[in-house]
Amino acid sequence: MNTIKVLILMGSASDRPVMQKAEAVLDDFGVPYKTMIRSAHRTPEATVQAVKEAEEAGCQLFICAAGMAAHLAGVVCSKTVKPVIGVPVASGPLHGQDALLSTVMMPPGLPVATVGINAAKNAGLLAVQMLAQNDASLTEKLKADRITQAEAILAED
Ligand code: RP5
Image 1 (cartoon, rainbow, N blue to C red):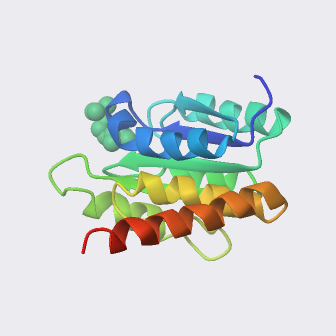
Image 2: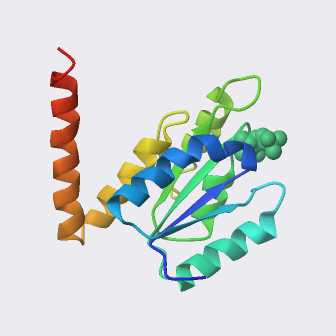
Protein backbone atom coordinates (compact mmCIF):
# COMPACT_ATOMS: atom_id res chain seq x y z
CA MET A 1 0.00 0.00 0.00
CA ASN A 2 1.34 3.47 -0.90
CA THR A 3 1.74 6.07 1.86
CA ILE A 4 -1.66 7.33 3.01
CA LYS A 5 -3.03 9.54 5.79
CA VAL A 6 -6.63 8.27 5.74
CA LEU A 7 -8.21 4.91 5.01
CA ILE A 8 -11.85 5.00 3.93
CA LEU A 9 -13.64 1.71 4.45
CA MET A 10 -17.20 1.04 3.34
CA GLY A 11 -19.29 -2.03 3.92
CA SER A 12 -20.49 -2.44 0.36
CA ALA A 13 -20.08 -0.98 -3.10
CA SER A 14 -23.63 0.29 -2.64
CA ASP A 15 -22.24 2.80 -0.08
CA ARG A 16 -19.95 4.38 -2.67
CA PRO A 17 -22.31 7.15 -3.92
CA VAL A 18 -22.50 8.46 -0.35
CA MET A 19 -18.79 8.12 0.35
CA GLN A 20 -17.69 9.91 -2.80
CA LYS A 21 -18.42 13.13 -0.90
CA ALA A 22 -15.73 12.25 1.66
CA GLU A 23 -13.30 11.40 -1.12
CA ALA A 24 -14.04 14.76 -2.77
CA VAL A 25 -13.14 16.63 0.42
CA LEU A 26 -9.86 14.74 0.82
CA ASP A 27 -9.08 15.40 -2.86
CA ASP A 28 -9.82 19.12 -2.40
CA PHE A 29 -7.48 19.38 0.59
CA GLY A 30 -4.76 17.25 -0.98
CA VAL A 31 -4.89 14.53 1.68
CA PRO A 32 -3.60 11.14 0.48
CA TYR A 33 -6.08 8.36 1.13
CA LYS A 34 -7.18 4.95 0.00
CA THR A 35 -10.70 3.56 -0.28
CA MET A 36 -11.53 -0.11 0.25
CA ILE A 37 -14.71 -2.14 0.50
CA ARG A 38 -14.58 -4.21 3.68
CA SER A 39 -17.42 -5.50 5.80
CA ALA A 40 -17.44 -6.17 9.54
CA HIS A 41 -19.76 -9.12 8.95
CA ARG A 42 -19.01 -10.36 5.45
CA THR A 43 -15.20 -10.00 5.45
CA PRO A 44 -14.09 -9.72 9.10
CA GLU A 45 -10.54 -11.05 8.61
CA ALA A 46 -9.93 -8.86 5.56
CA THR A 47 -11.18 -5.84 7.51
CA VAL A 48 -8.65 -6.40 10.28
CA GLN A 49 -5.91 -6.96 7.70
CA ALA A 50 -6.78 -3.67 5.98
CA VAL A 51 -6.41 -1.78 9.26
CA LYS A 52 -3.01 -3.36 9.90
CA GLU A 53 -1.70 -2.62 6.38
CA ALA A 54 -3.02 0.95 6.48
CA GLU A 55 -1.21 1.69 9.73
CA GLU A 56 1.98 0.29 8.23
CA ALA A 57 1.42 2.71 5.31
CA GLY A 58 1.27 5.68 7.69
CA CYS A 59 -2.50 6.00 8.02
CA GLN A 60 -3.43 8.51 10.75
CA LEU A 61 -7.17 7.94 10.95
CA PHE A 62 -10.00 5.87 9.58
CA ILE A 63 -13.37 6.77 8.05
CA CYS A 64 -15.78 3.83 8.18
CA ALA A 65 -19.15 3.82 6.44
CA ALA A 66 -21.81 1.17 6.68
CA GLY A 67 -25.55 0.75 6.63
CA MET A 68 -28.08 -1.37 8.52
CA ALA A 69 -26.39 -3.16 11.50
CA ALA A 70 -23.36 -0.96 10.99
CA HIS A 71 -20.54 -2.45 13.05
CA LEU A 72 -17.66 -1.61 10.70
CA ALA A 73 -16.49 1.51 12.56
CA GLY A 74 -16.68 -0.28 15.90
CA VAL A 75 -14.69 -3.26 14.70
CA VAL A 76 -12.03 -0.98 13.21
CA CYS A 77 -11.94 0.98 16.48
CA SER A 78 -11.28 -2.27 18.35
CA LYS A 79 -8.17 -2.84 16.22
CA THR A 80 -6.52 0.60 16.34
CA VAL A 81 -5.83 3.50 18.69
CA LYS A 82 -6.01 5.96 15.77
CA PRO A 83 -9.20 8.07 15.56
CA VAL A 84 -12.15 6.42 13.83
CA ILE A 85 -14.90 8.46 12.17
CA GLY A 86 -18.14 6.58 11.53
CA VAL A 87 -20.60 7.37 8.76
CA PRO A 88 -24.02 5.72 9.15
CA VAL A 89 -25.42 5.03 5.67
CA ALA A 90 -29.13 5.18 4.85
CA SER A 91 -29.53 1.77 3.26
CA GLY A 92 -32.32 -0.64 4.08
CA PRO A 93 -35.88 -0.20 5.33
CA LEU A 94 -34.98 1.91 8.40
CA HIS A 95 -33.30 4.62 6.29
CA GLY A 96 -30.11 4.81 8.36
CA GLN A 97 -31.68 5.03 11.84
CA ASP A 98 -30.36 1.52 12.49
CA ALA A 99 -26.88 2.39 11.19
CA LEU A 100 -26.79 5.61 13.22
CA LEU A 101 -27.43 3.82 16.50
CA SER A 102 -25.15 0.90 15.62
CA THR A 103 -22.30 3.29 14.83
CA VAL A 104 -22.68 5.87 17.58
CA MET A 105 -23.60 3.71 20.57
CA MET A 106 -20.16 2.28 21.28
CA PRO A 107 -19.31 0.81 24.68
CA PRO A 108 -17.26 2.99 27.07
CA GLY A 109 -13.58 2.86 26.20
CA LEU A 110 -13.99 2.53 22.43
CA PRO A 111 -15.04 5.87 20.92
CA VAL A 112 -16.21 6.31 17.34
CA ALA A 113 -16.70 9.92 16.22
CA THR A 114 -20.01 9.53 14.44
CA VAL A 115 -21.31 12.05 11.91
CA GLY A 116 -24.89 12.30 10.69
CA ILE A 117 -26.65 9.82 8.42
CA ASN A 118 -24.99 9.95 4.97
CA ALA A 119 -22.88 12.90 6.21
CA ALA A 120 -19.78 11.85 4.32
CA LYS A 121 -18.76 15.43 3.56
CA ASN A 122 -18.59 16.18 7.27
CA ALA A 123 -16.61 12.98 7.82
CA GLY A 124 -14.07 14.18 5.27
CA LEU A 125 -13.90 17.64 6.86
CA LEU A 126 -13.54 16.21 10.36
CA ALA A 127 -10.68 14.05 9.10
CA VAL A 128 -8.99 17.13 7.65
CA GLN A 129 -9.52 19.03 10.92
CA MET A 130 -7.87 16.20 12.87
CA LEU A 131 -4.89 16.14 10.50
CA ALA A 132 -4.69 19.94 10.65
CA GLN A 133 -3.71 19.73 14.32
CA ASN A 134 -0.19 19.06 13.07
CA ASP A 135 -0.36 20.76 9.68
CA ALA A 136 -0.42 24.56 9.38
CA SER A 137 -1.13 24.41 5.65
CA LEU A 138 -4.31 22.37 6.20
CA THR A 139 -5.36 24.79 8.94
CA GLU A 140 -5.11 27.71 6.54
CA LYS A 141 -7.10 25.83 3.89
CA LEU A 142 -9.82 25.04 6.44
CA LYS A 143 -10.08 28.71 7.43
CA ALA A 144 -10.35 29.68 3.77
CA ASP A 145 -13.08 27.05 3.30
CA ARG A 146 -15.13 28.52 6.16
CA ILE A 147 -14.90 31.98 4.55
CA THR A 148 -15.98 30.52 1.20
CA GLN A 149 -18.96 28.84 2.88
CA ALA A 150 -20.04 32.08 4.56
CA GLU A 151 -19.72 34.04 1.32
CA ALA A 152 -21.83 31.45 -0.50
CA ILE A 153 -24.61 31.73 2.09
CA LEU A 154 -24.58 35.53 2.06
CA ALA A 155 -24.61 35.53 -1.75
CA GLU A 156 -27.97 33.71 -1.61
CA ASP A 157 -29.71 36.81 -0.23
C1 RP5 B 1 -24.15 -2.88 4.87
O1 RP5 B 1 -25.32 -3.34 4.31
C2 RP5 B 1 -23.49 -2.05 3.78
O2 RP5 B 1 -22.66 -1.09 4.36
C3 RP5 B 1 -24.64 -1.47 3.03
O3 RP5 B 1 -24.95 -0.15 3.50
C4 RP5 B 1 -25.79 -2.40 3.38
C5 RP5 B 1 -26.36 -3.10 2.17
O4 RP5 B 1 -25.32 -3.79 1.52
P1 RP5 B 1 -25.53 -4.42 0.06
O5 RP5 B 1 -26.62 -5.44 0.21
O6 RP5 B 1 -25.92 -3.29 -0.85
O7 RP5 B 1 -24.21 -5.02 -0.33
O8 RP5 B 1 -23.34 -3.92 5.26
